[in-house]
Structures are given as C-alpha cells and as structure tokens.
Image 1: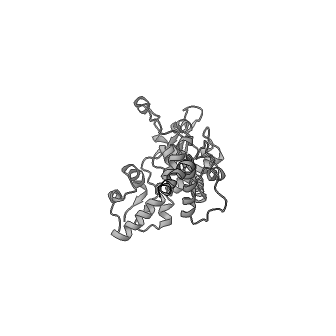
Image 2 (image 1 turned 120 degrees about the vertical axis):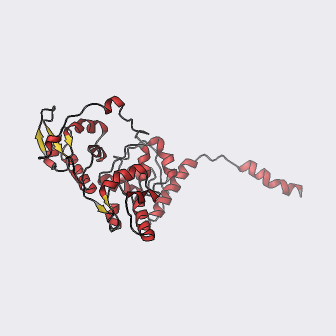
Image 3 (image 1 turned 135 degrees about the horizontal axis):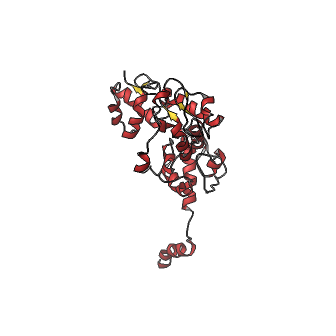
Length: 282
C-alpha cells in the first residue's frame, strides 16, 4: 500500500522536464486567434514563427506572417499603408483593429520605430515664419525663399505643383493628393506629416513652402446620415470608432455637436479636436 502511494511522486520526479518555449507558443497562439477572428482556417502544418527586427511601414505581408501577424491583420496593415497611413511610433500598431496586445508585447523589442517623437523646443516653436497671406489667389506664387522659389497652397495645388518641391516626386505627389481627398482638405500644414512615407526631416524641409488659404473650409461629413462605409473611409475614424458611432446613433439618436463624441469610449479629446472640422451635425 505504501509503495502504491509513493509511485506517482517518484514517477513525476523522474520524468519531469523544464519547459522554456512559452514566448514562441504565445506567438503561435496569437497567430491562430488572429486567423480565427478573420474567418480563415489555420493551416494544417504548424506556424513557424521567426522573430526579427522589422519596420511596420515597409514590412511585406510575407514578413509579417512570419512574425505571427496572421493573414487578416497583415492585410489590414497593408491597406492602412496604401491609404496613406503611417506608423510613427511603436504604439501606433495597436491602433490597427484586432491587433492583440499580447502579440504587441512579444514584438515590441523588434519594432524599428521610436517609443515617442521628440517635440520641438520652445525656441524652435517661436521661430518666425514667412508671411504667406499674399498667396491666396493662386496655387503657386514666386517668392525668393530659398531653393524652392514658390509657395504652394495645399488645397489647390495639383500633382505637378507638388513635384516642384524638393524631395517630392510622382509617388509622394499622388499620396498627398489622395490623402487630401480622403480628409476633405487640409486644415493645417502639419497634416502633411501624416502622409505615408513623409519623414520628420522631409516635413521640416517642406513646411516653409506650404500654405493654407485663410478661411478655407474642408468638405464635411454629416455624421448623422453618413453610412458605415463613409465614416470608416475617413482617415481620422477607425473601424472600432465607426462601429461605436453607428451603435450610438441606433440607440440614442442623432449627434447634436462634437461634445456628444466625448460620450464614446473610443474617442479622446485630441482625436475629437482633429476630427471636428470635418463633421457636421445637421
């Protein structure tokens, strides 16, 4: 009887072994969860995870799959980039719908992006800028301001106009105009930095030669009658935010003003301030 009681204990001590593949297994699990969420069957063969440094702004779908992103997540990231989206800091990845936090934590050391973006110093912010008020009448005005001897009005310049700026070729020109159309027009020069591929250094080079006419009003989206597709197409409204807006309209009726957006959990005050010029509430 005593022998039978101690046999299980002896068996465990003799056969146990340490297991140290938790991180790899977690990545595999996140990949399977992503596939399940996207309605895609997991492959019969086990998923081979290959961790390594990557830039989410340039990584191919194949590379993202090897990192454990899953088909649907990789496709959403590629669509986001093609629409002009850009990842500026590591945490921007979490803005992609369905991005698992556990996957983000596993990959954070391999993301080739900064944690934060350094802000301009007070001296830089107070640096005087040229007066461009006289450039309202035309999209291009001759001005002796440096290598680029003209100033562009952001909302009227065409592709050829943008290509006259140093550092802007056909690809960037198309991206700027496409992003402008998606937004409904630029309300601030800083929005150029949101165009995919435009680095901080390139933005600093372009900024003195760009202008927005005083009194410009962007194309506005009526939040109370806009469809799901129309809302989700706006660069400042994510998929989750679109769902919450549609749910709120269904439950509580129309939005009266931008303050009603503060009642939604997926919006913060900074996002509301950026989005408000592009919305109307009639």
